[in-house]
Amino acid sequence: MLPLRLEQLREKLRAPLARSERVTLPAPPWFARALPDEGFPIGITELSATRALGGATLIISQSMALQQRREAESCCAWLDPEGTLHAPGLLQQGVELTRLLVVQPPRERLQAIAVRVARSGAVAMLAIDFHPVGGKRAPAPARQADERWVRRLQLACEEGSTAALLVTDARAQQSASLPVALKLELEHLSPQRLRVTVRKERTGRVGQSMELELP
Image (cartoon, rainbow, N blue to C red; front, side, top):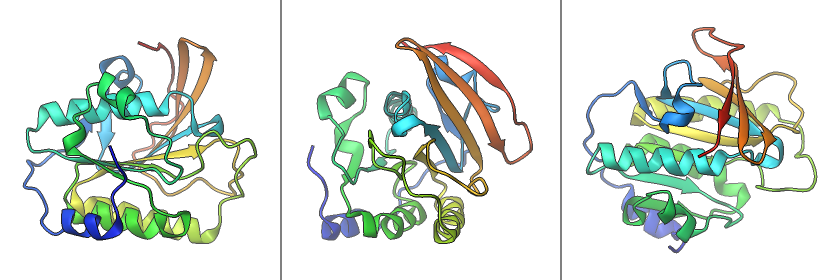
């Protein structure tokens, strides 16, 4: 699985795929019961965990595999600036690599590329490593420009009927929560146990917390 060059990405995004109307995209059954609607909404779901880890990669890869099985022509994309994705691990979770676009953009191009991919309608599910995965230091505080970008990305997702999964580092200081449709806080209680807390939800269903066993 090789990262796409920008010119290859442009070719992939020229023609949107025809997809059925949907309200949510699937989440793994063990994880779905912790979500207000048991799936990911069209728009942005923020997965916030210490060092941008906390099982987010497992959740995303299993969700993409479910979406690919649900819709035969469905494609997904993963923006991976640090190149941390491991193809054998994705295969183990059931992801069909021929229908997964992996892009390793420079950090300064990440936001613009994310908006373009979401708006294109070419992918049903888009994962974005917003903060460096496994960084030793806490990321810089969110800027006003980041909030504006998230609003643009939310609108692009609605245009493209895309569910974006935005992986953030919980250590980053934020004066206010990012304008996402759903924010989930992931906290490892043990190597096999995860607490999922709903911190933001567009209809106000917040505070729900559930402890889950990792598969």
